[in-house]
Figure 1 (tube, rainbow, N blue to C red):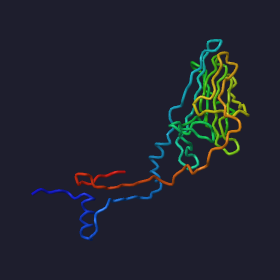
Figure 2: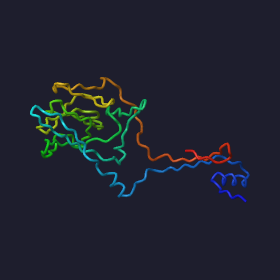
Figure 3: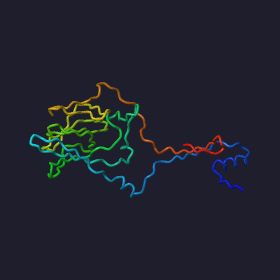
Figure 4: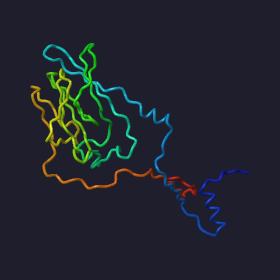
Length: 233
C-alpha cells in the first residue's frame, strides 16, 4: 500500500466534494502592517557604516588633504522614506531633482595628510544630506551638493569650502539637476564649475501617496496539468 500526504489543495478538494461544491483555487491574503523588529535588530541596522574618505590631489606645495564624510543610517519613519519615480529604470526624486535611493553624508571633516588632526567642516545645513563631493584639481577647494526636500527649499544646492578654511558656504539661486548623477564638474583651472540645471518653467510632478501601509502578502493554490496543486504568488 502506498501512503501519500495530503496537501492543502487535496484537503480543499475533499472538503468541496463533501459539501457538494466543486473545488476552486485557494486564495489567502493577509493585510498586515509593517512590523517593528526587536531592539537588537534595530541597533544592528542603525550602526553607522565606516566613514567615506576622499583624498585630494597634491596642492602647489605638494600637500594632500583627506575629506571625511559621515554616512547616514537607515530611515525608519514614513516621512524619511525615499520618494521618486523610475521611468525606464532611472530612479529619481522629482521634488529634489536628484537620486531617490541611497545613503548620504550628514557631516564632513578635513584632515591634513599624513598625520594631521581631523577638524569638522562648519557652515553645513542643520539636517545636511550631502552627496557628490569633489575636490578641485588644485586641492584648494572641494565642492558638494546638499539635498533638501523641505517645501520651502526643495532641491539640490551647491556648496563649497576652502581646504584650509574648513567652513562651507552655499551658493543659492541655482536649481541643480542631479538626475543623471554628478550635477557639477570642476574645470581644469579650478576656477569654475560646470553644472547641469533644471529647465526654467518646468511644471511640478503629479502628487501621489508614496508610502504603503504594509506589504502585500498573497498565496494562490491552483491545479496543474498533472492534477497536483501548485503554489504561486
